[in-house]
Amino acid sequence: MRIKNISTIFKKEMIDTVRDRRTLIFMLLVPIAAIPLMIMLTSSLLISSVSKVAEERAEVVIEGFNNLPMDLQQSFSQSDKLTILTEADFPDKDLLEVLQAGEFQALVTIPENFQKAVGSESTTDLDIFFDRAEMKSEFAVDKIKDILQPYREELIQYRIEARGLSAEILEPFEIRSQNVASAQKVAGKEIGAMLPYLIIIMCFMGAMYPAIDLAAGEKERGTLETLLVSPATRGEFVIGKYLVVLTTGVVAALLSMASLTFSLNYMVDSMLADITTELLAIQFTGETVILIAMIILPLAGIFASVLLSVSIFARSFKEAQSYITALNMVVILPAFISFLPGVELDTKMALIPVVNVSLIIKDAISGTIEWQFVIISFVSTLILAGLCLWFAKKWFEREAVLFRT
Image (cartoon, rainbow, N blue to C red; front, side, top):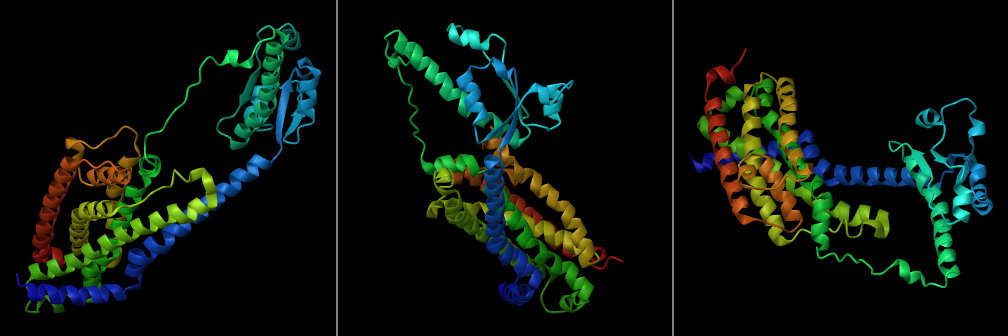
């Protein structure tokens, strides 16, 4: 292997790759622009939809409305958040079935002895039926409780005062929860699963089109034969092309990390105000960035080798694209492991490609780095990347693969 030849091939292929519009889109445009726009659009739509549903008047059926005390009846009737219906509005119908059909958002059943029980200070209850699969129904329950809860507290206060007691008798002690986790750890736990998934997918996508173009594209353009008669060996060609694909994959991964951090800390946070200040407190320290770059590098090496091998095997750009689209699922499923609760990094997980990187990035974001597993993951992934590169080189040296008909 001559370094000069590899360097020349790398520079030539990198220049051609950077000039390719598809590569620029997946290596630069998607990580930098598409991800923030997607997050901003999704967040805006979510906030708008939730706000709209929360402001709408909810239609609620109160079965046994007349069993309520008069002051509570007035509170329901005068509410500007609820439209009160009764069983008389749905004659000869099963109210639960009508609720499930979505004709109203919640059903409140009042027992006949409710008013008497309240007056005699006996224990009683009422039931609220709702459809948990519908957001409007859940908001309706909240609006109902906004009326019932204050009334309940007033009853308690009245009964206590009637006996000359202090309200503090109901609270013999107060339970206070004190959070000891840093904002970084909280943010890592809540949304840390999403970041490694997107970083890994962006790494794969950033390497995908350069790999297709550098092998299958050469075949389709009829320039592969010209390259093979040059002084460079096939091994040098593979290494040169491999380094280009590796570079684009790593660049896409790092850009996606920077883009996601900016989006979560500045764009989404500004839209959600103080609601998610702690939730979105993602900050990448120098150590975290180096760790993620270090662990992404051998993974990108695996992607580059596999993608090049598939591209070399394909007869055309379109055929390679079809193979790699199917291969994309092999990457997505292990990367999704970071979303699963209770899955933690251990020796076994550290040996599984993609899964180990996903879990390491998730832990690094939350500020908990277990270096023994990081080392195991890095070494095992690096060895696998080396084996994949060796396979790609051998694959490229086979005439039957290069000139498939």
